[in-house]
Amino acid sequence: MTTTQRFATSCIHAGQQPDLLSGALMTPVYFTSTYIQEGLNQHRGYEYARTRNPTRDAVEGNLAALEGADFGVAFASGLAATQAVLELLSSGDHLVLGDNVYGGTFRLVDKIMARFGLTYTQVDTSDLAALRGAIQPHTKLVMLETPTNPMLGLTDIAAVRGLLKELGTRALLAVDNTFATPFNQRPLELGADLVFHSTTKYLNGHSDSIGGVVVTNSLELSERLHFIQNAAGAILSPMDSWLVLRGTKTLHLRMERHNKNALEIARWLSQRKDLKAVYYPGLESHPQHELARRQMKGFSGIVSFDTGDAERTRRMAAAFKIFALAESLGGVESLICHPVSMTHGSVPEADRVQLGITDSLLRLSVGVEDVRDLIEDLERALKA
Ligand SMILES: *Cc1c(COP(=O)(O)O)cnc(C)c1O
Image 1 (spheres, helix red, strand yellow):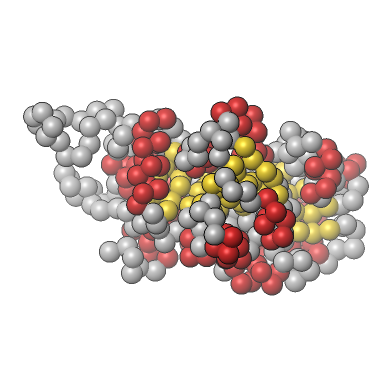
Image 2: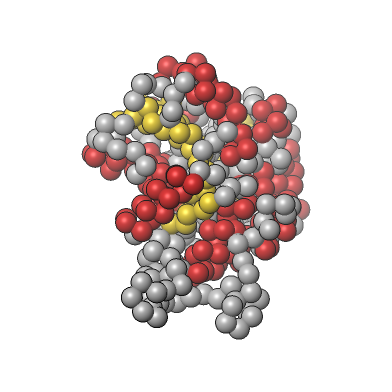
């Protein structure tokens, strides 16, 4: 039923069916830890709610359909989903990790997984020659993000798949699609084996839940991920499953507006003479704009810009009336973030500077408000 549906229809319907007991059209929140069994080994597929829950089943089916995947496995947070992907590996395996991945992803690899014998190399995955050099015989996974946070650099997913094929490695390719969302970019169709998300961001979209998901077309990988989900226990709760289901019903509508508002704001910012740089894949001035047009349907709602003046950036950050100064992104409301003092504080200064994450950089998560109000807010803050 879901495979032939178009994206907007899948957002609203995929993974869901009217409740068998009452006919309730909306999936109920199944608050239960256990299920009655009619006799020994006689049950309806539900034994204990860490293992399975009908609300979670529904959101897993929904999120899988949105990425064009056969299987979805939902977790308690984006990082729990990331960890589940990493737990497909074993001690002694080698991981190639993008050099500008989410800070928490790096911390998880560097401070936890590495203690269990996972080795890793960080590399700019947009540089295919560098990536080629980083792949080792025991590399089992390449994990990357595109676009990256907060510099909005892109990696050509199909080209990475081509390289892995050419090298004859069996390393899996996992893409964090949180920033783009499946509305704008579908990594499985470009050759990824696994796609994962922080549903906390655009998929839920209302800044009221923490969650994560991994999707794949491989039955074998999905079975291993469900095993990890049950064995390690970092499951998405029934309430959060329901919130994400509610969120994805409007994903297509929200992303259309996020894309439109962000492009308009990026263009407006890039016409100003008093800014050092504006980063947005939808701008012709973005060094990978060509790739962005090829790989993405829209360019999502994150725009970064550098005033070139740390003092001015500090004043600005406190002067917004609509953009809220807060971590996170992807909600209907607009947020502003100062990466150096907020999300990227733990990145060593030398690495930060090399990536372009300066003291004077600000990152916008452009919401779905009226863009004229957002631009007025920016104008006011830029005058501060
Ligand atoms: C937020 C985020 C994560 C982590 O997700 P949580 O839900 O906060 O655990 C991972 N990757 C990206 C790109 C993110 O933005």
